[in-house]
Image 1 (cartoon, rainbow over the protein chains, first blue to last red):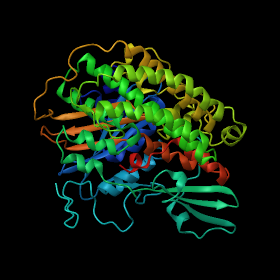
Image 2 (cartoon, rainbow over the protein chains, first blue to last red):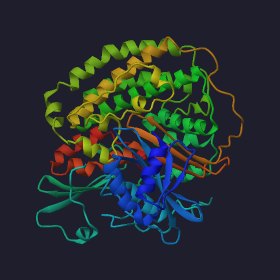
Image 3 (cartoon, chains in turn red, cyan):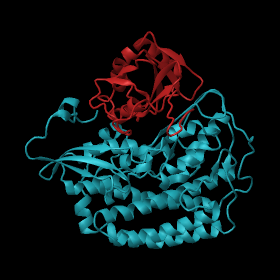
Image 4 (tube, each protein chain N blue to C red):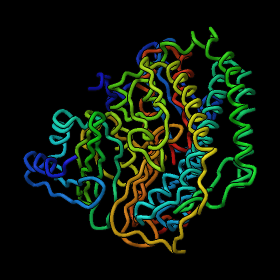
Length: 149
Length: 380
């Protein structure tokens, strides 16, 4: 896989995209509001049909959604990152593009409080319905169960 | 692209049930869910309209726990995720730390790791066949499979000191050297397995009741398997050639000869056949290695306190259930800043609603059984 080819492709697709190299795969950072359009294009144009890891990372100043994408035919892998505002994290769902995202996004929603707009069924999956707070965030404290980082 | 299925909108959930519909709960304490899985099933007569899994009964937040453990400690918590492939989970974590440290693992440790992984895979598949056949009403195979599984557990106990949660991996190799009797016992196990597995196949594979209950039940197409993120035997039964051992070889799998077991029917019977064939392939791998375990160190020399450089590391391995990914975000300290375990069971479960929709409630146990769900792996 040629990273330069990928870089030109993503720059043409999204002028605001920034790149991070040095890891195993190319990391592309894109703005949250354009993510849905980019997702629709990469699955048809570059054949990234396998979304194998969706997660969120709390960097204390902001949240970052991380999507690991791979083409099953080509093994071409790319990591898409989206920075979100910590007070009001909101990003469009991709569960209609990759079905696996539906459960993973529900997990990110309850653990980090990320709102996925137009998600078909955004409810708590693992935590009880009356749970308050977002336990995977770094500032989460639970004095009763003595959870503090 | 995936096939269209109707998506349940929040509005539809508020609506009362239509006439003739019935909601039943399977679990959380149901013998066929093998753990605390709770399925809310909407039925119309005997036909399944919708399945909604409720998770979290065994959620321990292993990801959060790992954030406060050092790089030597967090490996052993993952044994409690997918306890049937505890060894392979540990391998994924150890490999991720090694990738961050850029550490070379000695040849002897690599070979020991593969043999142990394949033994674990056989033990896991054996347990699955026994338990799944029991779900479908056949009690006898359970005793046949546990006979072989006990032999593997005894071998594990001798070398690792534990039967189920082995905790045998360290960053840079394995914790102890092999037991002196290890090679002889594995060889006698290989002979035993080859002569006995045909008995099991006679009981199950060509059993007309078993075939009637599994052939054509719970069909998953190739495009859907990819879209739902299915991996492992579930995806391979639908024709997805995604075996990590072949596609992204690790730990020396690239030097070995084995085939990726593919089936194309995508039904419950295909998933059963894939696992049976995988056991033969695992035995084939063990046979290639057991006489050629290199001499030398079983562990690379490492510092007592491990620090990873700032960055992100992702490794994946093929467990008995599919692709397990370990994603570490490091800020340069002695503990991981964030860990994500991409567990195979979580993605495989998400396909259950799609697979079971429209079938009869009696077929659900065959569909769910062949997904090989391990609940602690899903909840983490």
